[in-house]
Length: 478
Ligand SMILES: [Zn+2]
Image: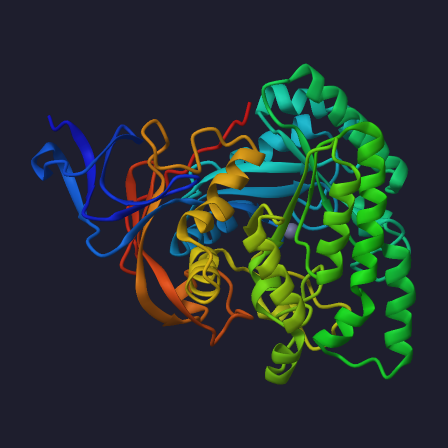
């Protein structure tokens, strides 16, 4: 029997908070067990040659939507397969009751085991879930969800208040299938998370927020419709402008600061939103506040997408401008934004149609996590590689209690990706290996692609092809 199951030779290891160094990495029983200048190939069953390549910790795609528009098991299989293309080896997916997903409401004590059963054995990456309490009874389940299932993060959608997305009516209850979903509900949720945090001092319990303000959206959307009602992504941006993000951030951070709740402001999309977030953090230094942005808010703008035509880029919050992209890159580089995720939601082109308001929001991007960050962040804007590894791996792992993820140091799970920093590819739906039949990133040229992705010591992606079986496991975070 060999001393190691797998050995990665001749690569440059990219270690978050440490730096880059030429070293070999050895794996045994799904864990990294040794790092050394020259570990003999004869000591391992399998050897991967990473000469001239970078070895990065597997990305933790911390904003994902398994099963939002398709059956959970199919989505888990096809969409975590796509994650490996981008070097992600863990995903943390959102789930809530109400419209989409399982299209029903009830107790998470009953429904969450159903979700876990549907995904089990289907995922290529390891996976966890953030849960959104939509009813007061579900808020009361928070301590139990922490204890039984190791769920340590929850979600509130600021824009569901008085707004039904599906019908664009003011009856949001048809959509949430929940109780009164307003700032009162948010207060109760933050209060419960804060109380539950006291009983669980060793983990970070947090509430993630989708920050857009629905009463302002109503006025701006009415205005756009009265003004010729253009069916494009600019109209969508104009109907949900950055001011709606700023106001929602103000509301959420004010309540969080009064209660002392840890929060994460998700997918900050605009210069205004990130400025408001930083301002709130400076004002309320006593609370633990972390910020996220997405690949699409860093890389896509409505002017370019509208020139190409189609509504494939409809997403909440909307795609903004090139100027917003640059400000967000600056905030990623400065460390104000803690992590970048894909907000992956497999959404077929037929769900988009040609009408902007009823078009289904969201699209996939997980296959581009490291490629976008390396191409646009490292190669184009000079963010060091070990910082890139912090932004997509170590930081979300720490924020969400994925204990053995986000590192390459001995003791870590053997989740990593070998990246060819010189490989250039043009994005197409085909290379993403997702179930999704289009991508708003179509035609974008990126340099720096994973050539091998290893999950729990298993080589599952190699040279553009899937290898082996899906062996991802549920990550209990307590
Ligand atoms: Zn999302």
